[in-house]
Length: 281
Image (cartoon, rainbow, N blue to C red; front, side, top):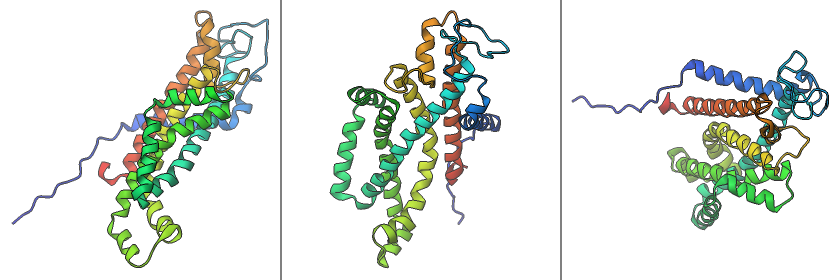
């Protein structure tokens, strides 16, 4: 008698053009981070009081701001600052959340219960509002702001890692290794659990990075992150909105940079998740 086989549901992949466009956007961002000093036509804080709020020109391709600073140069250097700040936040979130998630999923019991209740308390507050509150209570600067963003992202990483760890612990090969005496970090967690848990985390890094970029821009806009005159996407927006009508490029360009980068990160994150998950191929 023939038997029916249920095939895994496949999600339609993104258009290859959209995916490659996203890769291209991120490649440009990486190039800017690495080569901002070379690409910028002027120093980011160089003022020219005879060239205030100019439109695009050969000397200033994106115009100038209210202090005569070149918008393109500030955008390029600001990209480096914003991206590195976001990387710091994501690094903190993963560095703290990943081992905690494995501990909760592997040990279970009171360790899992206590940790989940603590995380529920943190997640009761909107992430960005909590980051603003933490930064406002401490000394407002970019390091404090990104540590705060990293803290509010920790529960996301912990929950994802915990769920994956619990799934892996129930697999036959893990139970077999345990029956042969595999215990602890060196004999069980590192060789058998971490390699099978890390893939979903990699797929989520792009999404976490996108949130961290938005958080940096928001905190810097509120003068709780990067402090003037240092350029970042947030500080450029904060300075530019006051003269939007006279120099729209000053606020449009960093806003577009944030939107395009976050869009590209989300698309690439979905694509990586699709490639790593056989059920979605």
